[in-house]
Image 1 (cartoon, rainbow, N blue to C red):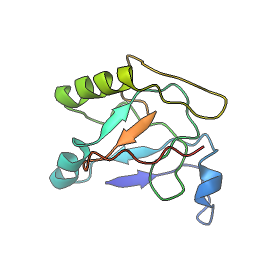
Image 2: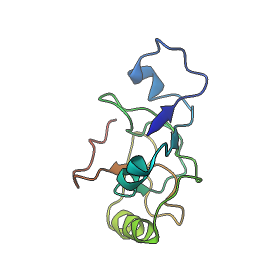
Image 3: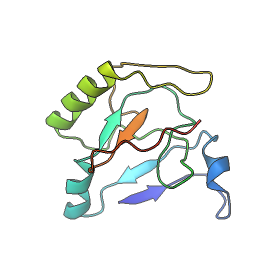
Length: 117
């Protein structure tokens, strides 16, 4: 799975990146990675910053809609987000019909990544 932050200098700290508006591009590089990605729930959000993704500090961005999810994943994401309002500083948000956009991420383990404010 390849992660790419456009316009980011190599030495930029993750804590700074979290508050940027750079997009997070996730590209499926091989079949194994694609299967792993299918186990991740992408919860919808129209906000492009302050979301946790990528490393211990989290990184702001939104996941390009071209990322492929199975129908099952999309439906599960919709059910999960409809029951779990996700809030961040100054911008509360909840259910949306666009589960491709990053709002919260659940990993294969089923443990939700810590929401960082």
